[in-house]
Length: 187
Image (cartoon, rainbow, N blue to C red; front, side, top):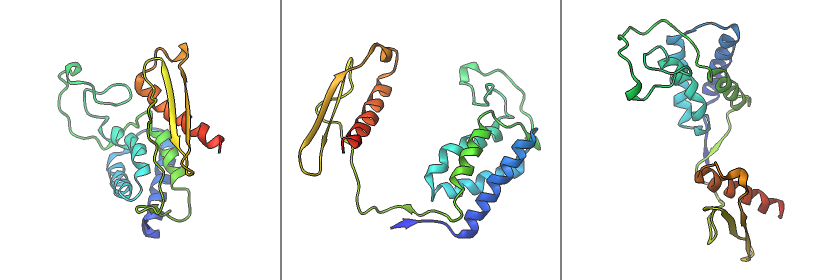
């Protein structure tokens, strides 16, 4: 079972993303009100297609980039780095954030299908990745998977020196991704 959107909404979103891509190609500033409308429409679609959510960040940053206390990529600075910039009215045109062109490119790829895809909401089958009795901690890493026939696939090892400066979160995720990839290669 899945959800989708009407053809009209899908085509509207495709048109909004294409218009935004064209506006970025011409360079210069973007109309803030049009951008707010585009963001609203795409935010609404993100409820049905959550995969587009990360690629809306460039729109959010662009729309708020005119406000004070922002860095060069238009992210809000931490409060302890704020200066006393005067409050000004919202401008009619805004500068795009450096990440906006890449976000728009990704959105154009996600909206490239002529018809809206169906986003599954109640899957009939699922897979679960579970860390077993081996984990990625300190210098060691490993994995264990229970296979459909009930047997156990197990591997372990040590991290190389090239990972000494990487966070434990990185090693945890890297261990999971590489373990799943290896298990798939082994069938």
